[in-house]
Image 1: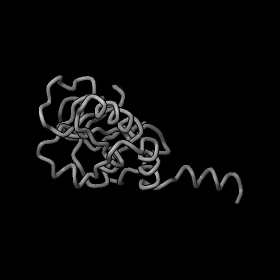
Image 2: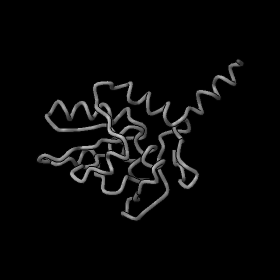
Image 3: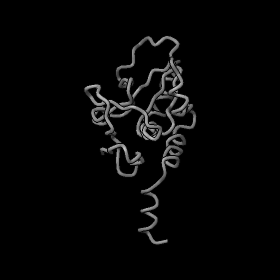
Amino acid sequence: MSLWLLVAALATASLDELASEGAAAYPDAPVIRVEQAVARTDALLLDARGAEEMAVSMIAGAIPANALPDAIGDRVVIVYCTIGVRSGELTLALRKRGINAYNLYGGVLAWAQQDGVFVDSAGQPTRRVHVYGKRWNQLPKSFEPVF
């Protein structure tokens, strides 16, 4: 296989391959899949991405990581980022503090694959999602990638 074909293959990794990489980076961080996360009525969604990414859109109902309240009671915290690496790190840190946190497997990409709702900085529904970079653009065609 030529070097060009190898680079092209790596650049077009599937969502599951990317999500597996994210989960493998923090194997001790328990994961939750989108279907399970949606079913949790007691969950607090926590965005571990950067401000520039959150300015494009966030999962509806989520809050930025720096806005996590001191007292969350018995609520489950579901942490997400683009694919699961940054959220895996934050999930472990929260669990060390005694918070029942889970890493959203596949992050915003998996959320979009399930046609999850995103909102812009004004709280309005949007189909624009920051995907960190070209390699991570695994959004369905109905979404607009931003990187």
